[in-house]
Length: 341
Image (cartoon, rainbow, N blue to C red; front, side, top):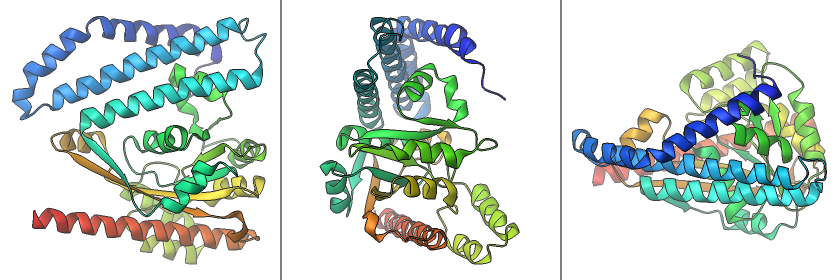
């Protein structure tokens, strides 16, 4: 389904969502009471936890949308906007929204987020001496929020995000995605690599370009299709590498390499995680228990990235297999801990 035009998104969709969120806020006490009454039927407080997360999102989404509208109005409906000051203010809105909602999810779902063996990468990110290209595993509901929170709130980076065109249906994402240096792309059409290169080309030392090279959340079907795509293109060695990975789909090199080529001084950060629920059904099941999400970051200096394109493709696949090995190790360790307990 094509994304509606700008006028429809701004003057129809955005007001409709605001009205729905206001209505939800008005009935929020009833929602919470209903969730409490329903909880015994589900063997715990899962309905209450879901209600708290949904209401927190709606409230913070409403506040952030109002803040964006106020900034637009004080800038003379955008005509008197100082681009640098406006971006600084909008990053503040995004940081408040992401930090607040992330905190609400972590508390309501009883999640402990644990970083392991990532001290070097964290120091590189926090130092803000060079721009960063962040290549992350994509495998669960909410992992985008997890990675953006790490960059924006923990390390005070200014993330640039490559997003699917359909996310424009969310008015807040539409506004922040357009007025901040981000890109909406349609994987089925357009020159995505050129757009990513343009996004990476003018990064300053605080910027961090976030890309999910797998192109979507991991699934057995996506893994299988990635292997078939490589085989059909005659990339037999890469197909064998992809087949050897159990928890990762083969990366699509185009966007990642376009970013690295356009920002040759950028440090490359690889990010992997375990413990993020793979689906909404899994998230519902996990809400009955305390949870631990483990995150691992690796930092690769620009000087260690191969110079030629073929070398970079091999290098990217090698790193993706390293991420897969770590994910496999953590899954096995968790299974052992569960069997012992």
